[in-house]
Image 1 (cartoon, rainbow, N blue to C red):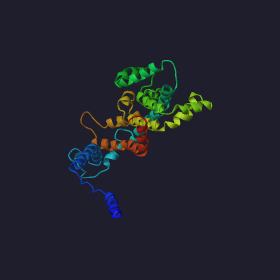
Image 2 (cartoon, rainbow, N blue to C red; image 1 turned 120 degrees about the vertical axis):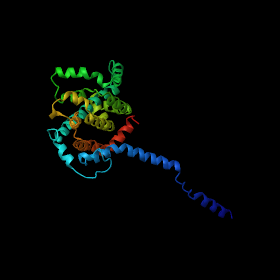
Image 3 (cartoon, rainbow, N blue to C red; image 1 turned 180 degrees about the vertical axis):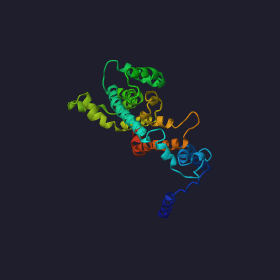
Image 4 (cartoon, helix red, strand yellow; image 1 turned 45 degrees about the horizontal axis):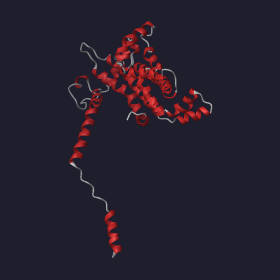
Length: 294
């Protein structure tokens, strides 16, 4: 009798609980999330759809094209006097050069602040952090005067040189926080084996900084690729335009703007950024999760 009751109790205890019905609160929450997602992605979908419409249909039809056409891509490719691939190449040159400069200069600066001891270290670190509160527009005029006196205006050098001088405080601070999370015992072990400060950096610290390097490279590329103001100041020649300047050239203040070709070339200009996120998503998530940007 006791055995039967025990088995009954075990049977009752192992029964699965009935699934809770879909509550109205969950339904409303999911509907709001879906609506917010559609609202955020709708401008992108509208741009892609407009690039496939005739000129007279762009602002009269907010949905899918009634007449599908690829003529906007054909017209936009050479619409401003040069193949659009030239502007993509200019942007790629500036973006990749900026990535290389930031990776080189910011890692060295971050390693110095995080691991080395030198005079006025705290003062210099405080001054560096204070530049985060300094608007970029404040230094535009003196920086332009400097590069103009050096004869570097109308070239890519004003866009690249600052990146090799560790001017992006945000990335330096990000790497400092990452390096501080690495155990100092690794440095001590490398020093015992005969490594100097640069040897410790090159052999120990740098290989472990891959997540932070991935975040720095990705965001530097995206910010540089989308930058409009800096190239506008230093690149007056049309053949040196970057992608944002080339897209702006489709607009005419007198009303003769080429909307269809501009939307078509805008879709093409999004491909490098989209591919970057597609192939580097895992590294970006891992880097953000391990560098204090949660």
